Amino acid sequence: MQKIRILGNNSLQLKGKIKISGAKNAVLPSIAASLLTEEKIRLKNIPLVKDVFTTLTLMKELGAEYNIKKKLLSIQVKTIRSYEASYELVRAMRASILVLGPLLARYGKAVVSLPGGCAIGSRPIDLHIHGLEKLGASITLEHGYIKAEAKNLQGTEIKFEKKTVGGTENLIMAASLTKGETILKNCSLEPEVSSLCELLAKMGAKIEGIGEETLCIKGVKELGGATHEIIPDRIEAGTYLIAGALTRGNIVLTHTQPKQLSTIIEKLKFSGAKIENINSHSLRIIGSQEIKPQDITTSPYPGFPTDMQAQFTVLMTQAEGTSIITETIFDRRFSHVNELLRLGANIEVSGDKSIVKGKTLLSGAETIATDLRASASLVLAGLIANGETIINDIEHLNRGYEKIEEKLESLGAHIERFRE
Image (cartoon, rainbow, N blue to C red; front, top):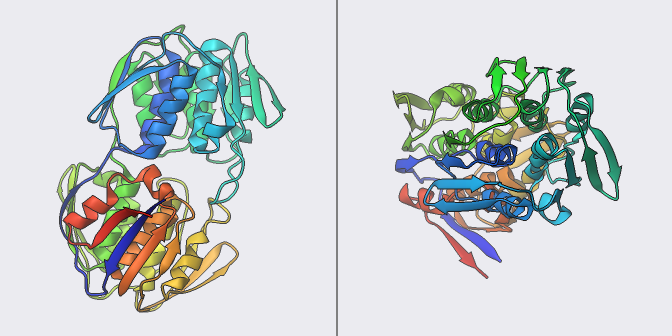
């Protein structure tokens, strides 16, 4: 079992420059989109994280051939070998559900396991299913699997009851090969959704309104190959920004897009950090000696991202006062709190809120990672906790952060990955 060891101290100041990797949440739907064509898709700036390789394992089972050379992925699905996404793979990564729309649109058939439970709360896929049914698919749930068939999908108007990133992506991909015009309303605005739309447009899809809540998609008979660069990972960038604020550091982030970080930057500035754009793809954060408390509420993009909630909680443990953090996206997304309490944090959870009382001196302890972003929060806390912090079950961390220990070590952290 892999673990991470951090020798932290509350006077640590991280300094240096790091390169932000490609976005995990952008590359996964882009890989699924290769099911929509028999031609080759080339994806640049691939993050070498576990979720990517899990997705590629699934794609190979479905019939894909692929090759990764450095940060370039070439993938092609000439013929389908299987229509089924097994439980073993879907339970390892919920984003596997994104093959449902493409399989149904190109092949008229899909069998995809229900994802099951999740450590950060329920994430129902009924919005995916209802949307595909409106396009004309026949869907049944049997023995834990979604069984979908469609002879002729037909464009229509669909309004999502609430924002759903995966649902939006699944429906966009399905509608690209659907007869007629599909209008999707109340779409998610995340940059990763726009990135997928841009890839599909390069493949020949006709999509109007990219980046807006209403998308108009005119179905085409077939899609072709394309080359597409994966956008930077805004959550990884946000995590390192918080590391800079937390340690009163001086960190330059390259290969990022500051515009996609505007809400996170605004909150960090309010807490006292100085952040400046070096150019359109780089920025610098200089942490303040005094961190100001503040309240945050997670919400869909462009609001404060739920994927940054755990990391921001750590920052607020070092603020001079009380902060209230409200989670509106997922239930049960406070699993990191119990582990932070072990490090000495003063946090109380009440319903969808966590009340963080600072400033508290953290001390190293043995912890366990419960999900991807909780893992990142424990790494951040370990940096400033006096003494040794051990993080167990870092498989979660491997899913979304590429070489996190190497990047932090280059900034001056004492951190290592080891096996026991």
